[in-house]
Length: 316
Image (cartoon, rainbow, N blue to C red; front, side):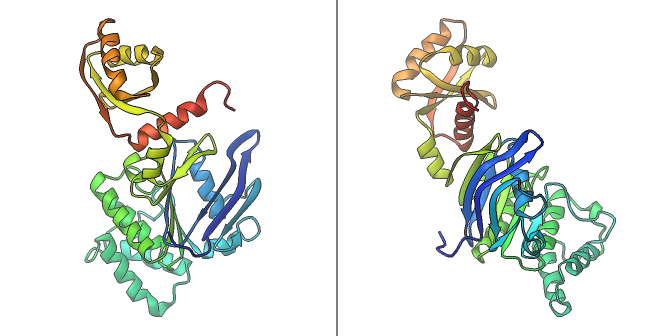
């Protein structure tokens, strides 16, 4: 990864709302050209972290430098050097496409002589060439999100914050959106993005897994799968998923068990040794197993395993 100085440097960052600790002493760095994903369930502290780094919320404690600027001391200077796209559609639905672009260009003080080139780039990137006069509110979700992304980077910021940018967008549009993110990263832009979509997390160079305001793990998707899984993962398909889950959670050879779609994923010490006894264990208790096989762990397996450990009694 890029050896340049960090674009974002966070040390022991804290955010409290009264007695509630939303972000609890998190630390990390992000470098130019890096795509970092903040992964976690709703309420984990992802969006609160992004808003502090954008200068929209004042930290309670710790320190964060964005583009070398202290977010607590000079939030306005930070906002001039970043692009930000919130999880809710941030443009004006009652304005036409071109009117939204011009409005945000004025907010970001884009020089007039650069505006034609920037407008052309956004329209091409968003697939809206020829639709400049369309009301923004009439656009499909994927087009809206690409338009919002274009408006967020009109001023060519070196750092881009995206807060669940593809929420509610169809899978094809989500993939196109991620292609755009990687194009920007290839040009040296640092991208920090929050998501709860596990498939999207695979597109990030590095992941920061957040649970209850704390970082529980970080690394590339491949590193997390290799490092954080302490056993083998076994897929189980059976006729009574709920009963099977209850039974397997009580079995001493099962480290963890969770529902994944219409199947179960188990974490066991050794799949080859554990599968036959587990099949027998279920069948003797009236559960018919139609499929049981070892599989490669997914990021969702990793995240479920980590958050389960964090949530066990004794954890703060």
